[in-house]
Image (cartoon, rainbow, N blue to C red; front, side):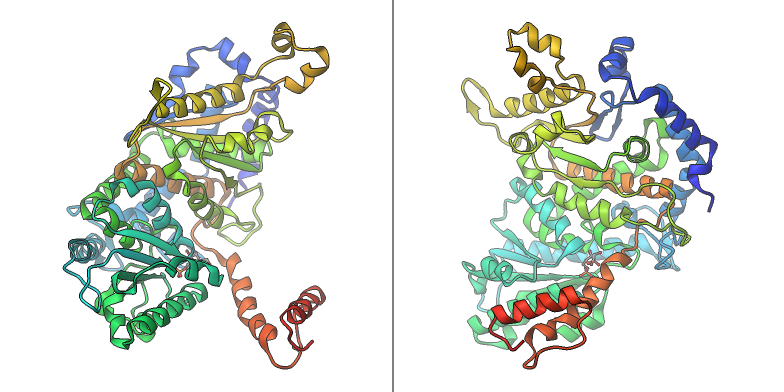
Length: 547
Ligand SMILES: O=P(O)(O)OC[C@H]1O[C@](O)(CO)[C@@H](O)[C@@H]1O
């Protein structure tokens, strides 16, 4: 694989950066007011305004040339057609197949992937309808009122985020809860006020080998059997979502109550597979399929739109621009929607488990910085917490602001709608970040001279604004697909395999090895390093165990 940093396209960007880095967004807008209109693009219902970026038309042209040099077009085609682009795991990467319409065609490994996807969706829909209607009852004949999804990582964050986002669409009177952490507080807190007779557990695990999930599932089963007094209750209260039928059966869940998916769906790309079963039960099959259609809309946009008008491509290239040329470390994601409160957490796994790599797909070290650190909180809460640093700190923190024109439900306060105030805050922040306020402007307001430097707002802080008509199943699907493809484009430029996650393995194995050292009757030997050994001794002492 050629070093992308050795290409003439990279050098051209480095030269361009040297010329542009000292320029302020105020100047860029003064020279070219038309950029406000021009530097926008749409995909489905999503409007991206990227005019408040430290970039010009030339920047975009150079970035697009870099994408072409990195072979982005061929890589997109390879992904959508099912080539095994996850090379370190020798797998195809086909989350896009999860949302293909029924009449689409795609064969994977000799099988009709579209038919397989829709067969599972139809089974999920049938099950979800029965649970929602009360036809599916618990062991004692009562309808289900609460669904508890037990999973972690991609088997938790996606459905948990989407349930929160779409809970206003959940009208069947069934609520969902999500248990992920192996901290006993998670499962005990979740179950504390639940009625076992009306609770359904979905054990969600792609591998069905994840310690946290299986441990929580065993605890839930013990709770259920203990309360209902009969092992046979498990069959009416436990279903599984997995790619591994053998392990599901070994756990004691009837595989008739298992919903499958495929090794070509990465865990963090799986919320629109059977992993979304809890969400489907909450919002219904129709709304779930609307969400899939939303995903598909952006997939088609990504697959076909020219790079210069392609939302995921533009957002990813700007990510590369700040990461590799400005030295930015992080990207804030700031949804102006309380319903998207889990969206930053969801994106953390999607982006950082995918692109947090220091070797390329060919095993050679990467040649540039990779893996933006994603973080954030819903506005306006973030404004009263960390925006100080965004506005006046020493670091450059590019940010994505996400806003919705229509609220699900508005509240009138002080003569106006609360939602308008929310959106006014979003717009105020992006404007203040971009244009700031100069010392002269502050002094002209009569500010005492000694206070002026404290009040200067430097501006020149780049943001994207993603404006969406309304948060619906469809637009949520569009937003998630947008970021999935952002990850893919960045991974392509950096030459990395965005679909493996070897870096999480060592810690898992070590935790399994260390557990006996904490609990053994005799003081443990053979601990991995002196610091850990000392901490194990301290822990044992605190727990009253022999040291
Ligand atoms: O769905 P599973 O197999 O339980 O895995 C859960 C999560 O664990 C990881 O493998 C990381 O440890 C994620 O990639 C995945 O989403």
